[in-house]
Amino acid sequence: MGEEPASTANINPTAQKPDDKGKSPIQKWLLEEFPLSSSGGPNENYKLIDPEEYNRICTRLKKRLDPGELEKAHERLEADLRDLNRELMPLFRELDLRAKVSQNQYRAFQIGFMFLAALTTFVGSLQLFVVGDPGNNGIAIIGLIETLLSLATVFLVNIQGNESPYSKWLTSRQRAEQLRREYFRYLADASPYNEQFAIPKRRLLMARRATSINEGKDPDRVELDERRNDG
Image (tube, rainbow, N blue to C red; front, side):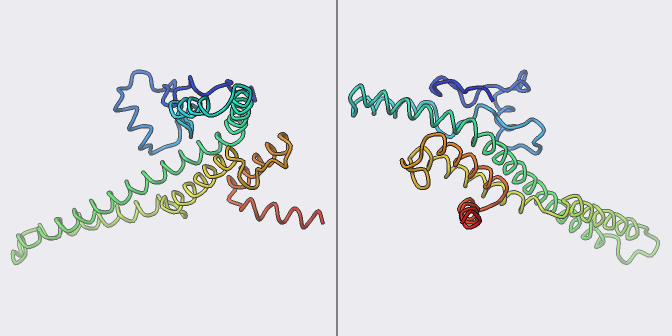
């Protein structure tokens, strides 16, 4: 993959995607925050660190470090961000989008169930107006409508598939938040990304852990198993 820009300061996390053209700001916001399908793909410009916050951090560093230390710290931060944007962020964006899609599908199904239940109750209550009239076909018609509503409810349940949107939502969100945690661990040099690692090895470790999380595996358990096998 090509190199990321040297700085994220000039990258707009809400930059337009190609398919955003012609849409109002409200439409673009709704499509990004409440997607029902992942067909449009994730926002490739989304960052976990807001560019404005990044600039504020750099400003604070200028006040605390001498020029030599500042240059080293800035180069290290830029290198870490490039590594994360190349290896971890594509996985995070995809999982974050899946979580949003599944969450909104779950909400849509719940609204559909509530609507069908309310409509079935309303139709059933109409029987009070036709009961006791032998020559009225209203009861048969109402019964037919209730049957159709029941079939619609069954259909709604079946199209969810074997795995409900709720479970997909929880799975994708859990993995996305694990990647978010890994992102800031890497930037903070927290365990297991401490200074005893050479930079290439540190980057490789981050990429392997991100892949394990994306596959639903515990990265610590994977590393432990690998050490046991090597031993």
